[in-house]
Length: 48
Image (tube, rainbow, N blue to C red):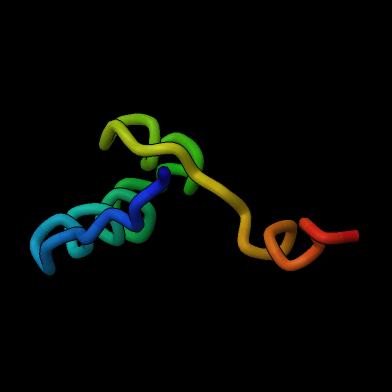
């Protein structure tokens, strides 16, 4: 069973800083933080 992970505010701020201040792509920032990036635009089409 998959559980939704909860991230601390500090972790979220670090992720945003990687993209906004260090010019990381979202995918690169996610990988460097040890998480898998899933594009929300595709998640809504899962039942199609």
